Image 1 (cartoon, rainbow, N blue to C red):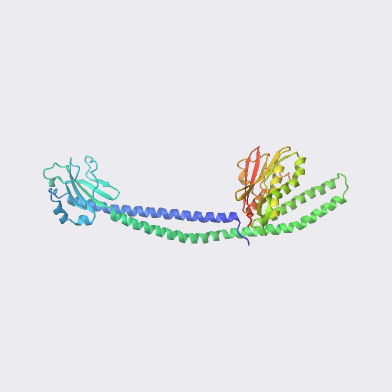
Image 2: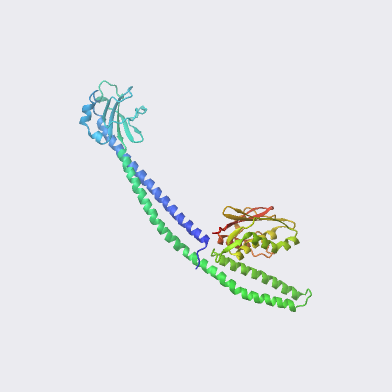
Length: 422
């Protein structure tokens, strides 16, 4: 069995990336929620501790001025816990007394009337502000002495950093394991499609080979029937001619299907340097009589020695299909332009017609098999020419695209890698 088709490989990759992106999103959301819950839990613990401390200190008298040193010596546990206690008197911006770890966190917040508990928070600290009980404040009116108890968040930040590292390592390990598992799952998911595609391709090959023999025999019998029938325009001769045309269309369709089945492998065997300039000139020579018959004009601009690496037969088929398509849809006395030039490491060939053109919603389907812009199939085409052209371009490492305006014509652009001689 050959390599999977490019479309199936792309779908497998998209399924794999979608699975990984979904899992990464879920893991990231879980990590953010876990981190947020942990952070709020730590802050809640600190708030509870500050509330207990402030409740105890609010019932103590205001420290006398100059007693901070003795107060610090007697309560070293505040500095150890990264906590600070400050007493403020109304009208004085700086604290009148301080206890514990020294941390400059600015003035008190605006004191709302009737509100006893106020929270302040900075980038690395959190504080609770509350009034001191009036019975413990000598020489001050009630509500004029306030207590602020604060605690640094260094320990919490350190714990969050450790949690972030642990979460990053866990998410990375989970994604790595999921990467391997997703690869296996996507491979198993597309295996039935690969087998079906392989069977379908093999059926196309087998059916095309088997049909060529009966069609050849039918065509030979039609030719014999035409030779033996009356030369006049008789009903019997018309039937033979109709059968002959249908047989020729069937043979063309079988050849196209066989070529498409082979090109689904998207590889070139026995590639050799091919001069595109000469190849396109040869294909143009084959249609010049048809152009003259319909008085269609040809504008040709070919650079010399445009060499690509590939199979000459396939490249002939590629440009013959494009030129046939342009000739078919260009009206009488219309213009067909063919240009070929080298741009860096690529060779670009443009085949432009002045025909009916395509609408914007039709462009994405131009290279689909059996798709036709018009349901009328009276022009003798099979609907496979552009699909074959696309497969040949891909097999040669190139690409094909189309631009078109309805009523103004279409332009097919072929990009093929230029051959670099050793």
